[in-house]
Amino acid sequence: MKNQPRPRIAARALIEQSGALLLIKCFDHRGYWYYLPGGGQRANETLHECLHRELYEELGVRIDIDELLFVREIIADRHHDTELPAGFHQVEVVFRCRLVDGEEVCQGASPDPDQMGFAWVDRSRMNDILFFPRSIAATIFDMKNGGYLGEIR
Image (cartoon, rainbow, N blue to C red; front, top):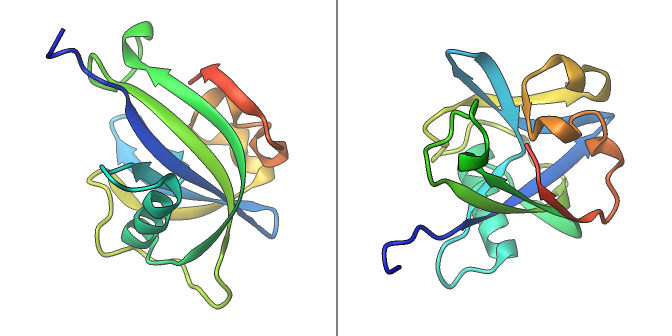
């Protein structure tokens, strides 16, 4: 069992401003798709430190972190239609965050390889875009300390 893959832990930010959600924008054979900014936790790094680093790398911004909203998992081997690699298992911890006053979002110095940019997506458009996790696209604006959501896509 030494070579058994371990779950990856990631921190994500839900940043809402004027009725729109800040999302990472990507492109592949499916077209444009979106997800919450943030990323993988490094060794000896707290989730808050991870989130501060990731938001600066991806979007060049400083943030204030508010409450924990929810925890979700994605286990690729349970889905036949996923683009994720076999064996991929990620635990995501999502926090409500705010941009530090005066911060302007831009393409950060170290964006993710699939990142095409960012988008502010209005609440009314969430069901019209390919957003991950898909199952909460319609309700994500209203999340309040949802706890553990389980394995969702």
